[in-house]
Length: 174
Image 1: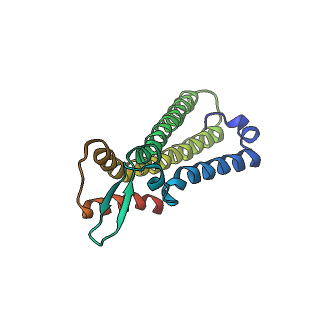
Image 2: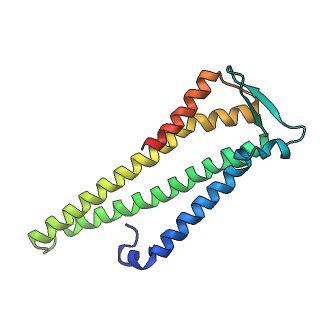
Image 3: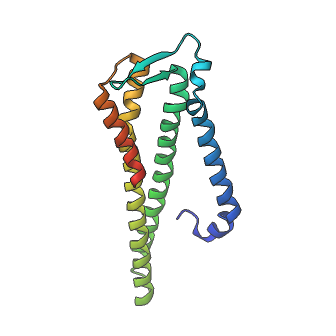
């Protein structure tokens, strides 16, 4: 939407493959310490064991949780808001340009074609906005509770924690 004439040159199969590899490798590197239980190794003496009602224990290293668990969410949230804001701004500018040019000597067919394109782009922008909004809203309670627990020692009940976590997992349904 930002540069449609050069889209095919910029977004090639190689570019897309590189982006996918970087995202998956980044995700693997971020989750590896937690999945491999390295927090116990790195946290000698700073580990807090949290008990679940069912007797499960989860080793939490404060710095590891903040850097690996919470910081990426807020970075992703900021990037998504910036990118979506740019897309939304470009879409509004294009919409105004189409509306301003509709009074010119364009034929009826051109006018209908531009209107149809504008409606498709507007619909795509709204869909993207809903997806971004759902991601932010579905994970915000979980990460807010994590920050409160790590930074201020404010803990929630097991039920609330499970609800926040599953609400975040619901994001994957979209």
